Image 1: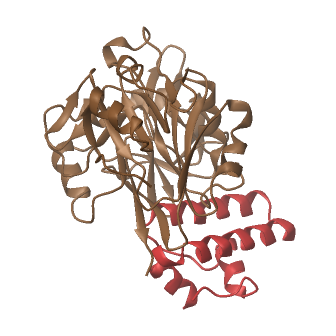
Image 2 (image 1 turned 30 degrees about the vertical axis):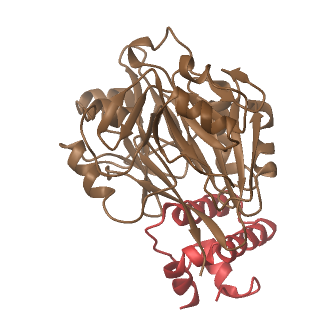
Length: 332
Length: 74
């Protein structure tokens, strides 16, 4: 495929030129900046926070560009609603990956978050991407959106996808960087999947999670960490309502997973720099807005990995407070 | 070399009687997903499906999971 533009934060004019030259792109930027782009083979979502080589930054008039890898055979844009998400996996290439952007607080995101592990094709067909958002001082005022550059559609209730087919001698590998690990506290389990929780099992006994968090004076900027056969998968706290005795998360919890509260992280900057050090430059990466905010990453360098700062990260399923990386590798 | 789908090792992986350790989150999600599915539904039909899916997964991604393939072959 044609690939001349490199992965970085670009001016609107640079992105317009790349689209007009026929490049296939994943884009991240403000609604205003993405709205100035011509139709073409691109998908994108709204976000104004980025990690660049100079450090974390907020920008409303620049767009983070990730070109489809040059080795790709093709890239096909598509859009899906909550009702036909299973089709995303059927449309995914036999060999390749699917890049997705889903709007925060949307039904399609809720559906993906709860159902992705049950879809035919989950893990077999790599799905990578992120959740679009808004400026944090505009939460509740502005609405996260996604863009389908092929049709020009701007949507708040659908997700966009770019299905990228790879030749037989290339393969897509997804990787996560999680600076959090399980603490030594109680095992917490849930009997139902969902992002709104009242009761759960704590140390094997039924208990109210909000009451437990209050009694333990838990710092909810640190996530709940699920143990997936030794890999730590975070679920971040959105809201703890002491009066209603409820807890809301940014992603669903699932039955059959042992969760624990995370060990506190004192220094996000050095933790990310250390955790993501070494290795090759990924073909795509994103990191979480909560890490950006809680870690005070604006203006600070966290290593060499760049990309949008997002309201949720996708590596097969919805993740929180995690860096996601995509590598397209030549086999042999 | 990934063992044939008929090899008993796949059944042991799916049912959890052969534990696997990996640093790759994709592999661990697969193992976890198998375990959850098997606990929910240990029927022979489901186990067969899980075996086929797990074999296909490792066959497809053999090149990027060499350490995991080595464990399977042990």
